[in-house]
Length: 212
Image (cartoon, rainbow, N blue to C red; front, top):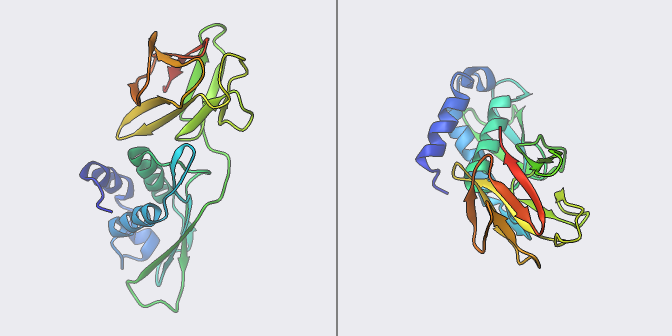
């Protein structure tokens, strides 16, 4: 996977100044961050809502400080937002010092650990201003209890639409619902770019998208 330059610049800003603390100065932290992103990309799977990647990464190094890294966690989150990946739990990068490894070498193992994620957006009811959190990227919206965002309205299909972030934008896609999905009153049939404050209608249920 070639990392897009825009994502690479974001990664550079996120990891600036943390290399010596984490790796004893013997490793290029940007290269480690890039390898974590590549590890995620190599382990993409696909389910009903789209691409899913691991959210837990063990990074084995010869020298440094055994720890977790908020900056490297954010690298994973940023890569997921940029690439439209779904994480089933919060990003968690753990640095593990292994004295059996040769100096300067890195090994990465990844897995999926489901867990609670913070909301990145909300659906605000146009009727009563009730706010429903959106926690997953590639969130499945529907009436089914297994949906990520459950809308208890009989006019909403069990699986209605998918909402996600990718390449710096928010997108909405109707997945063949019975009563359709609309943005600002216009029915959509393809992936549609949306923005904060847009009126999203699922069947007859309307909500404002709130990303701030």
